[in-house]
Amino acid sequence: MTDLQIAVAFIAALFALILVRIPIGIALIAVSFGGLWSMMGWNVAWGALGVIPHSFVSSWVLSSIPAFLFMGFICYHTRMTQGLFQAAQVWLSAVPGGLAIASVFGCAGFAAVTGSSVACSAAMGKIAVPEMMRHRYDAELATGTVAAAGTIGALIPPSILMILYGIITRQPISDLFLGGLVIGAVTMLGYVLMIWLRVRLNPNLAPGVDEAASWSERFTALGQTWPVFLIVIGVFAGLFGGVFTPTEAGAVGAALSCAVALIRRSLTLKAVRLAVAETINTTAALMIIAAGASLLARFLTLSGTGAALSDFILSFEASPVTLMIGIVLVYLLLGMMLEPVGAMLLTLPIVIPLVDHAGFSLIWFGVVLTKLLEIGMITPPVGMNVFVIKGVVGDLAKLSSIFRGVMWFVLVDLLIVGLCIAWPDLVLFLPALAAG
Image 1 (tube, one colour):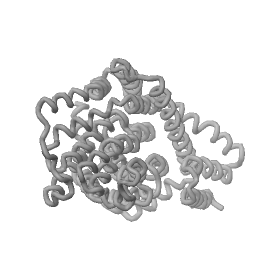
Image 2 (spheres, rainbow, N blue to C red):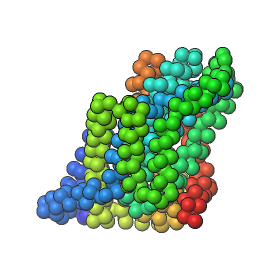
Image 3 (tube, one colour):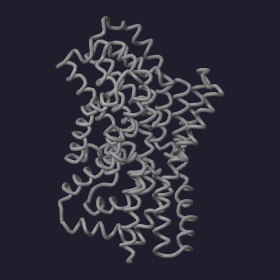
Image 4 (cartoon, rainbow, N blue to C red):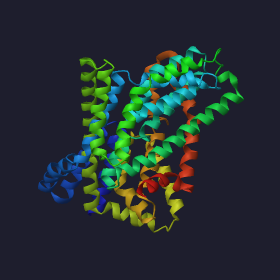
């Protein structure tokens, strides 16, 4: 067998392992090791297993991932994020669908300190969904809103997906953060507009609140949000102001979150233990997948698979827009089966050369890719955020109801992806402005 035939056989084996629910990190490592062994022998495969993953995961820039994760988990376990939804709820009480809109704003605020869609959905699901159900909101609207709004967590900095993408493609993480900030804001406004229009057309979806909050209640609630705003402003003012790098920003954020929790007297030993344990578990899972993906990239390069596939696709001479539409469809399909980090790391070695050859900005593509991967978080059959919300709300809503509820948000997401393709400057204007 030629090297290309061996690669095709092992890639088919990779998808077979994923379909039978073998953890994607283990599947990547096993297939890459087996492929290198078949092509070049035991010594080369063993040497690659010892060197390549270590070279990748020992990158200093990757240290920002556990730091940002720890920052988010500390904020969550010390309950610094609860005031976000409560403040939005009080200020938007008189707006049609106000509680659902408050959930979107609450998720956006939570995203700014976690960068995790799953954590965002879990936290806001515990707070917002029962409150909406208590006010007789439609179950599909209530659960669908929080499941979908949780995806904003990967777009608004700090984004773990963008950090990994920036490291792999060697793009400035701060520029990715700025582009993600714009699309995160556009997504948030798109969700808000859709909820408002739906409730205006069908008021039964979200019965109005009997009495609007007073101004004193509004400002009191707003005062409860200072911990999150202090952390966000401290981290991102320093990051985008050039005071420290994205790697250092993670450490600053982690230290600042602990300091604020200490000032609020909510930094307990239990909260620290939980935050440390969840940070270690999440980081370990991400690193195993990343190590497997780095091995796969080397395997594909040595076998010539990436170059052969790129040449095959380019032989059709499709226009850049047609190529991008094809890539969008591929990621929407992968999102239905794989979790975002695995889908991204599995495909980047093949997709990046195509995107670069077509003349697209890799900063632009990184933001659009993050958006596409987050759509996969709410689409069946996997839809991780949907299952998180189901686990949080229990018998308050059926799984099928949550999936129906998120479909409205998927339509908004697809519209935003279309806008990004039609007007790339929607993503790039803020990074360009920062570059001067």
